[in-house]
Image (cartoon, rainbow, N blue to C red; front, side, top):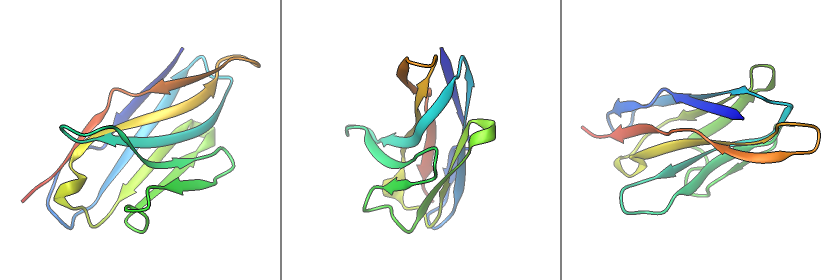
Length: 120
């Protein structure tokens, strides 16, 4: 199996910045897309941003320009740089990876989530 471990969440004031990191480990043959989702209390989980192995990115329209996703393929790690944070960005942020665990078996994996709270 593949384990995803997120880090970098915490409490930040409005207008501040945070950088989330997600490292994948385990039985990894290769990783296709990696991404970040978030879930606020009482709301559905939503896509924040995703990035392919080739570096193509996709963002939620409302977050484009403030958030930047990147990845280090050699380290099986994906990052989310979050700037100009707003209280409405408060949520649990989850890492997601679409990974081959063999040459033919493609599975989807989730991290345990990291809390981001934007408050003064």
